[in-house]
Length: 336
Image (cartoon, rainbow, N blue to C red; front, side, top):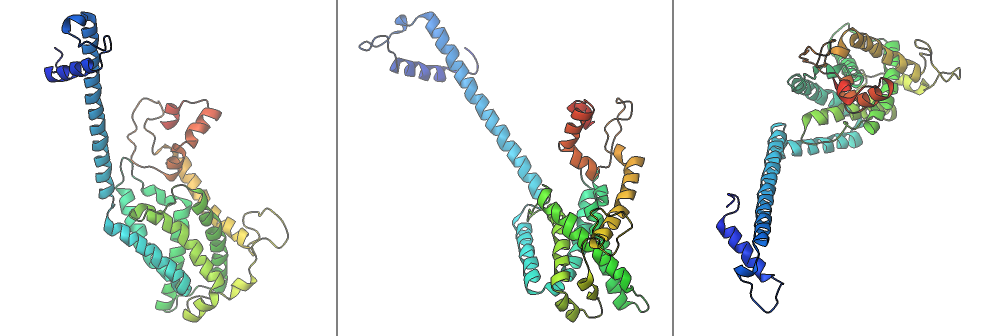
């Protein structure tokens, strides 16, 4: 007897077999009327059914174990009622301040960013399997650092005697910020899949925060400048907003870097290039090789420690597609 098919299981199955025995509707079947080959086939069928049931139970058990593992991971990452409630209330609070007190939204951005950005950096530094600290070299992060540094300097001018930011610097920075915040960062909220609103997850909410708050703050500067000037008279000088224009006055479509600095587009391009050139140099001098699993010979392990936003983005599919179309590489070779 097969060990997975005990006597009780086989006996119950034979009773069911007799119940549906159709060779003679008026006569109960007897063991002598059931051929040995039929018995053997039937026993194999019973064994197969029992094996299937046990295999199905093992599959369900593995699925439940995997669900428990994911649940523990999510709980460890902060998925609980408290964090979820805080995330929801914070979004409602930001919306309320934006609508009722737009003159104070910049301060809320500065205070919350001072907590959320360093906290996320701690999580990225301890990320596994690769350290994600270099994600902060991405354009969107650098623009937020620039904005918060500028706000900190403005606050410092109120607290430190002799510290002053001239009007031309203020105007140039405001033009650059309008172009970047209402252009690149606002567009990222629409097209980037990882800019999402997960109330319980600090990492995801911080990513959402740095993309949505700069456009909102810029909006308040442009459309609520009177309230801001009245509330913070010595901190912000927004008189130049009425004289700004978005595109070059000469009517050209393209802006040569370093020119047309009287326009929002011209200043935004200069700010972008101020980030782009150092970042490209960094990537060419070693950044491209940081997450590689193997060294140049393709055999020796590289033991990577750091990841970059470039590799994280390309790893999701574009790297495989580009490698296949332009270099004829397999998926395995592209991901190395």
